[in-house]
Length: 419
Image (cartoon, rainbow, N blue to C red):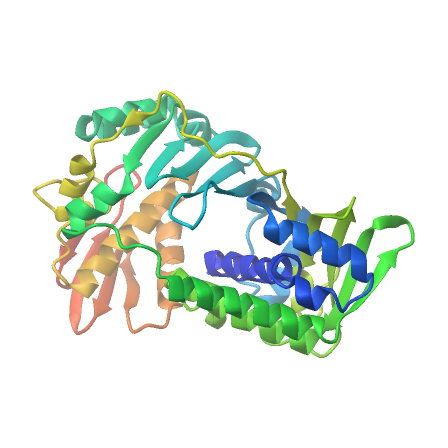
């Protein structure tokens, strides 16, 4: 699935960031020694950091590379254009000693539309987004947006602020406490230490044999060259580590190991500060040419503060829906509450939700159903889905069956049993 490939690509970028941020001791051994050492030290010691992630290069080169990997799964030109016209920025703020008061933010530009942002401050999540502009951008009619707003606001009046592009906030600890009957668990220090150790190990392994060359035309540009075998091994290993955190096996979606050849990373350092890293992931696909790179631009760190005027969402209203206390939603034939452990039924509802989300692009519902079924079967986890006729699919899991019926004009309907 494309989501997994993007996750795998992000893991590769994380490996690149590890070069500079987590392994100053290894960087000290590589020329130009002093410049890289100082840049790495400044980045790893900063109290406030951030980086912007985006695609650079040629959408056509990316399409050609993906076609070599899987001819049946190449995004159309419009989708690729949207990807190259999008970016997201991640920032952290070590507000005090220890990690309990650390703050984070994620802001996104989606196909040129700015304004989507999420902040986490003292256990409270703050979110805002230009909902109406984004919905219009992706083909929703004004009537669809109005219906969406009315439906959500009837269950959660505070959500109206989100449709107006204003901040809303949710106390995550109270949401979890209401849904699970206990407080939000704290981060496992051992797990955090393990991830840090894995990143350091990858950086050390790659830098042991890497060569660094300065660009004669641009003194700020450094090219790091390593072995394809080493790079792919670490790429795959870290993709697995990061994928596990997202609850998915990313390694199954990775292309096969490329033949032995040089593999490069591009770094830019100005005034002894790391400013950017690029990973051309086409080099991981045999036969691919050109450039389609994941670019990480290091941003100036700043304080992550509580937004003014945020509308508080009552956590009890969210947890009542999670608990399935009679609440329903039109999505996927009644929402995802009260799933009662029936895997086939659960997967059928998720399949219906997948089709419903695809319909935002205003395409053919039967085509979307076929695509969703194909991608679900590609998971290879024993759950099987099959289109039995136009707009109808059957899901099989653990000996049980569920039926999905989708329509261009009505909400999906999911029932237990064979179609």
